[in-house]
Amino acid sequence: MITPNQVGEILIGNAVATETTVPTFIASASDKELKVLSKDGTNVAAKKPFYVLQKADGIPGGFEFSDKVDPKYVDKVTVSAYSPEILGSYKIDGFNTAGVVAAKRTYEVEIRLEDQLSPENFTTIQGYYVTGQILGSDTATTVRDGVLKSLNKNLSNRGSDEFTAVTDGTGILITEKYQVNKPGKDTGRKLRFTVKGKVFENVPTNGENGNLGLLTTTQVTAPKPGTGTGKWVTNAEYVLKGFKYDPSRDYGYPANFDSTPVYASKSGVYNLIHIKHYVPNTSVGVERQYKVLTIAVDKGADTLANNANTNTILTSIRTAVDTYATVPANLAVV
Image (cartoon, rainbow, N blue to C red; front, side, top):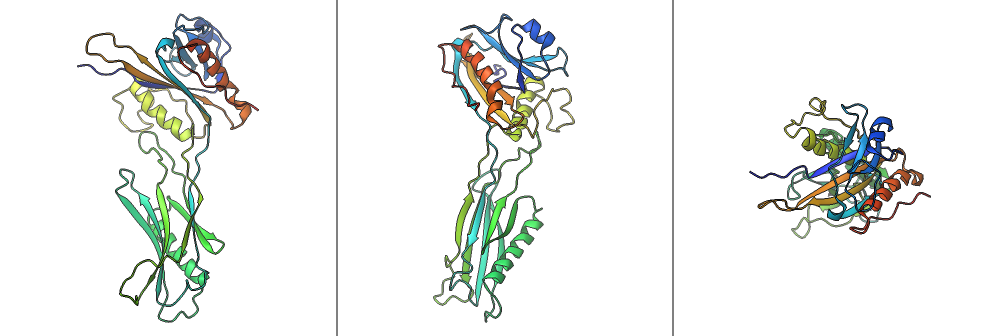
């Protein structure tokens, strides 16, 4: 039976070593330093196969290293600068528009939350307010606050870990909450949702009871998953290190993670370098095997000056790959 070898791996560091040979790197590099060196143990050189090494004081041997990368089999190199995750938000407004608040109406704000498994499965989380036969003391403010109170009660019944809903001027602002990841158990996937405001006649005059379309929905902040976030890197490390060190590991983080070295931090700020390369077919029945090496460079803080370490690694890769593939330009440092 033919099965693929390791096809993805990740190395994580926060600095670049100055040593230029494998023996000196092992002996003198500092913990979590990275270095690109030739396969023969010398400094990186044009068109020579290379490894990426990571100093790791806490494991036997004191270092980790990637699969061999042969420049002539490098298909693509990419670099992604860190960008934070952005929480999406919507505003429902229009309560104080003339003619919106009236007797015998139902006001609703609905959050349509996509299921984790399929967009065809979804949950609706709603808040309501109903005016009586006579409007009485109800105003745009009491109607809005009534809808908000109802919505927050239903959010609380679900654990209060999905959304915040607060007043915003004359309307209601709904914002997703950050979803914390638990490697091996919960990826912390961003919430996928839409929001809509609705108004219905309790006693429709024309026999139909559709949404009157009187409330407005505006996206205030577009959601973004970010790039090189601590969430992404810790999730990637769990999966990729599992295949590399312990493919039969159960998903019980961190109880059975003690034999696998870990370096990523959920609070980390990472630039990502991806090297897509392959091993050519070596025998009948074995196809070309593609691999992806990810180098996560912890910036410490999200400043342009802290892109310098990433650029040093890119320069080394550019030297080794030479004319076989295009290596992206360095990131801005000022």
